[in-house]
Image 1 (cartoon, helix red, strand yellow):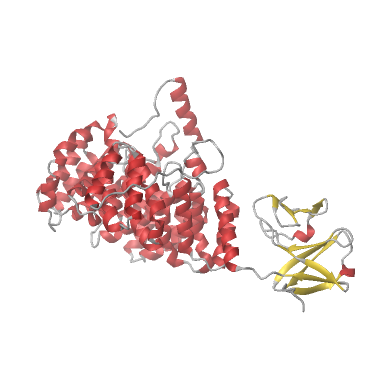
Image 2: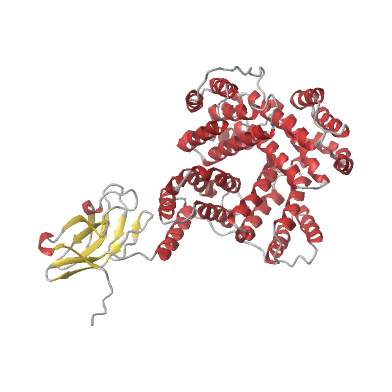
Length: 593
């Protein structure tokens, strides 16, 4: 009885394939190439090069078994399919001759093993920065039935493992990707997923590896520390360690809490407390914090240890901006603000902001100094205005700041600020609204003042002549997208205003803008990420503003940002900074404090 369990399929007579020649044909539903090298030596492989699918039957040989694709010079050893030059191995198959007939075993793939190998390839592609390989692997995993949500989890976990200084912009983009995925089915999910993997794969440029190696290395992590039995007390221990920059102790306590079985209810308030203690790095700490736990709820708590540890790192080490000397006015104001937090918190009700209060607060935020803006906000709280009502005023002011941004600043290589800086006012406003909803603590009110100061201090980025928003009635969605795609910001804003005024669908507008971003509207992953998160924040703030007559302002602000020409390369700016520092011994030039 034969013990041969292979799936041998007939190909064609050996006589039809002379030594030194090759032939492609379909077998078992696949396109196979058979290569006849010397007498009796045969190789069989996929005919399509794994790089871009060009036919390998037309390839060039080096020696007996090394095949090179003539289109892009990927090379493979046909003995085992190993890629010798390029980034992906080639599927090869057993081949034999029986009674003068060539037979090939078109192996039935073990799906679980194939998916595991593809994830290994995906990890390596990200680790070495081979984005072509990464995108192809993601598509193949989607075809194999891997869910888009699982791939989001893989991307953000990779970011958590390999980013040496903790989570990068891949973390918030992962959360935003989960929001965008319902529009896409099957392999079409590659469209939002590709943006995320591109961001995760940019670690080399966004966070240089401490070793200087070109490939990413795993971030070192501390051992778990038993947090005790009282979550509130453990949170204070973690807070004390974070304040003293003892990151190993802080992360160890966090890991210990997760190992103990504590979840979102216990741990989320700890990290919110850290984000309210300081105004962290242009609002990044709070922005990430308002996204990460919702993301874990969707991906599964099994990712918490890896992701939350990486999330903690930049919160602890992010710039505490109120400590920077240029922010002394805000620092001086904090003691009088902090002394009132408990009273405001206990007295908070549902009182809406009056028209006169909104006008005064907006004017102070957009035209006044630091003390004037902070005092106007404090006055509203003293009058019993609900924090949720105030954050809506702040959101509109942040939108106005974007609408007033001077595009000449983006084009000036001697100035550090640009479009990405001013967009943080709106994304921080959206994060502040969520923090007030989720963090039931007096310290949550401090985020209102952090945001108010952020909006006020960005005034130097305004144009000398703030633009007037024209309303192009009768504008279509196609006209809006054309104006954004062609980088005509004034027209983009006016057509968007007209589209919305005429009752245009907000979902269709936002979906059209998303698709435009996916179509290489920006080049660098960091710009793509900011465009997506600004657009989603604008959509959220539009909804939060309810029936406010100016509710469209966040969307107009996002459209202006998307339509404006961007200086993505920034090499000229780096040159100016280097000359200023090395030659003139001066710090980079900034317009804001």
